[in-house]
Length: 114
Image (cartoon, rainbow, N blue to C red; front, side, top):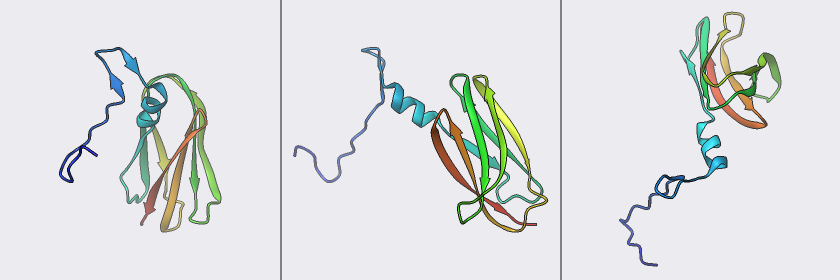
């Protein structure tokens, strides 16, 4: 190997000079959402950004992996989206918010504390 232990290797998914773009990698790096506030007392805002119009499904899941409720399942236009989640009826504890966009899934932990 030509690398030393202190060398830093940087990989770019876009190569703008050659106009090459890795669509699969770009889409997966764009798949993200935020839960605020977290821990939640009564309400949590779920925000996410879509790079193109997509089918989005948001579910709330308990620690055993069982679905508690489907928050939303709908087609959304590209751009920033905000969904309000009322957590006042949930017991204190740890839950998971699962977001599926066009068959790609990401899950984040949500803590409910009243």
